[in-house]
Image (cartoon, rainbow, N blue to C red; front, top):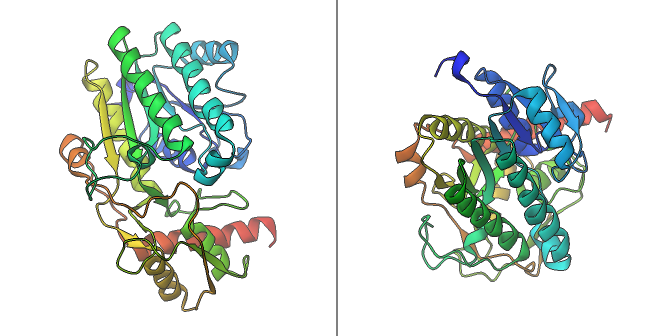
Length: 336
């Protein structure tokens, strides 16, 4: 696909962690890009120079209509939303508003403006506690927390909308996203983040005094939760390839897992951080968190057979090294 045929893309939540990496991948690939972000968890500094940033909310129909017109948008990548599982259990209505109602508004605006292609940031949490592992896309989707339900409802809205309107979509179900841009152009900047690798590298740099291990009695080899960690840059690359697939076959929609198909336990991840940093993290064993399944590992067969996706960073130590490099850069920027 040459640059002349590349439709302008609106990245919703493009100032956030994963969204900013998707923006980098699109820019690197020569796609025209604009960003909408309300900056509640995103950062202006995460948006590259030259990329238009509209500060606002995806439920603002008038703003969306203006962006679609000004930027001649033909595709949307939707990353905007709330992502903390325990918080969704404590405050479900926040998640149904931010993740479901606002997504409905964005989809409606897209249909009104005749935006043809929609890529949605979904999650392995839609599977709940899977009956089989690794998890295929055909596994029953029975979420065990409001976060998972809020995302599954959006998948359903997209399926129904694609059946009724001239729009195709790809729902990418992420497993555990980690790491940072290898060139340290972006990374996870959120204060008080809950992602394990982010927390662990903060602890390695003295920003936290310990790492909590939530649950040591799961039915896993060492009793701690097992997850499939995917490098954020590989995930961003998958979004660009999915967009190409939607543009090339506008009658087709896709639902695909995004993971490597290999699981690591919490303790294995912490051992890897120890190995990469040549330190020994202080670990504190705590009870399970609400809404956490014991094991979530993807079967990535579908994405590998559907897209020409060749992960470049499928190595746990490399993921940790890039996260550590970004955390050091953040310290310099913020004067920690």
